[in-house]
Image 1 (cartoon, rainbow, N blue to C red):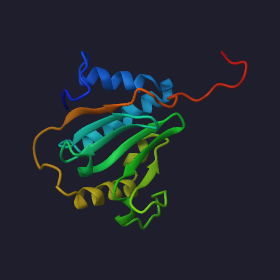
Image 2 (cartoon, rainbow, N blue to C red; image 1 turned 30 degrees about the horizontal axis):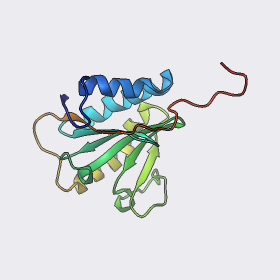
Image 3 (cartoon, rainbow, N blue to C red; image 1 turned 180 degrees about the vertical axis):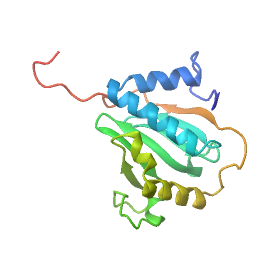
Image 4 (cartoon, rainbow, N blue to C red; image 1 turned 180 degrees about the horizontal axis):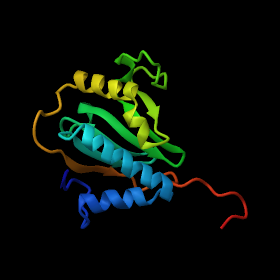
Length: 166
């Protein structure tokens, strides 16, 4: 995927910024984020990656445009794990009942490994989300990575250590 600069301005490229965000996580979680990102890039090669390093979560949204409302799915990570979020998940057919959450709109699937993204039911959910995308993902071309926002204050990206731990 190509990279595009976006506010906030930084001397680092979007790829360098993205890697710095991922490096905040424990090594195993960082590796999982990278593996899941590669899997989603292969599944959605024309999508624009909108990256947010926010207070609660590190998020990579896969979108048709640079507008967050065009997001099809998002990879969301926190100290307690990684998930695949479906912005319009409540309206997706889910015969295997893989989706978690009870919000009016959003649903998610926990990703203990990148293998979860290869499960037929999860692939069907992604395909259904792509089919509902408005506007649709581009039919041709390559996506790009856009750093959308970085919060100055963030929750820890690593699990808290027990008392007395270094």
